[in-house]
Length: 510
Image (cartoon, rainbow, N blue to C red; front, side):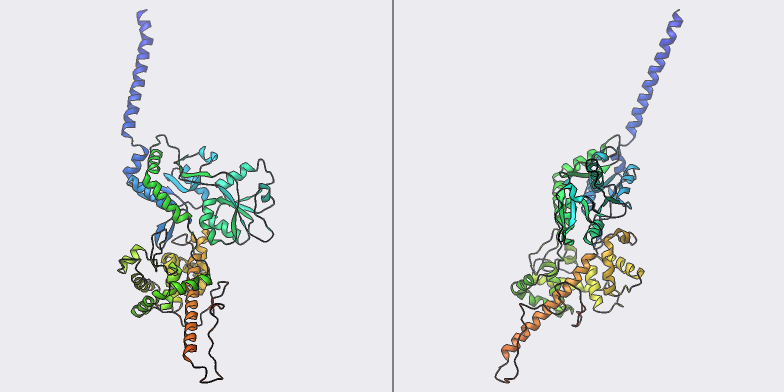
């Protein structure tokens, strides 16, 4: 009887010690297994998924840029690791990348939504923005202020985006609401389609539109479909949560909040400085700010051989001839030199107009050397200016697109047609340097040419007036000298429509 009663007890004892051993073993293993954060730091790499778009990541003048890129780089620096970018082909692929754990986080202006919270985790919100209807102002079309204003319209949104999820929810109470979703477009593609009239409406983050709206005259915001929603980085679900905890610490830092403020000013408060010239503002600057600078443009021309009118036109485009001008990206002075460019040409004080203009002229000489010698003037100059504005890698991509289309990649007239395509994923995904605001260098060069022609015209007007003052009208009563009406006329080729007409004057030389 005693033995029979001992056997069950013995089995229970074995079972107890077995469980204890297993628990001890699991504890031992867990102590020797690094957390997710420790694994990232041990390998020295943080994998970040994002998109090649103007709001997230792109190459600007040969250097990586973008709100999400700079913020993610700061987080990688905070962890003491290198950042490795992963660029999914489509917006929807971002979620697949995170779901399959091919990246540690996705940084791509992502709204926190209920549907996404069911599958993913999010870091702390760092911005808030409302999904907003964007429309084109047309005669006879009023601003959309109600949901039923969207009925029977062509609406296009990004597949897998927060606006697409929102429309699906709204359709339950508004069954007449119809829309299409695109797998291959970006936010700028949607704005392009809306601007050209291919669609009636799109819906996007209001902050994204605000950062781009000055490049799309005629587009405006309609009704906001929701209150401002939180935007954050997205992570795959992980049992230990150490990476998410590191994100929380990073975003709580005062340094991070200050960085976000600077990045918002740089990327979301950015205005298009490339609008076609305003004649009255130009002439006011010509009278008030140009005279004390003219001597430096002439001196720089003597030292470098660059046409002084070209230098003056570039300076007006860059700073409106303001020696104290400064941009959110830190370029400053009359010629708006970066710190690196100023250092390269020996400029110690970028706000000193003499140093800025002479240094800017020398820098132009150097960037011109990057253009193949076989390209003749004036195209050589236009290519140099375009490359300076957008980056020479992107310029080369545009020349490749030009060549693919059977056009001449050594002619500015042809290449300027294909530079804007670098803002379209269908094209920039096929070339080396990816996305670029390719319409900017086209406008940049066009503006400089027009400013140059206006300056040339004003010089001719001034000379005519001087001649008129020097001539004695009694010398030959049959001959009169009359200056053009400078306040009422535009110079030849400086059309108000902003068309880039061929020059009849000699081309500038660098």
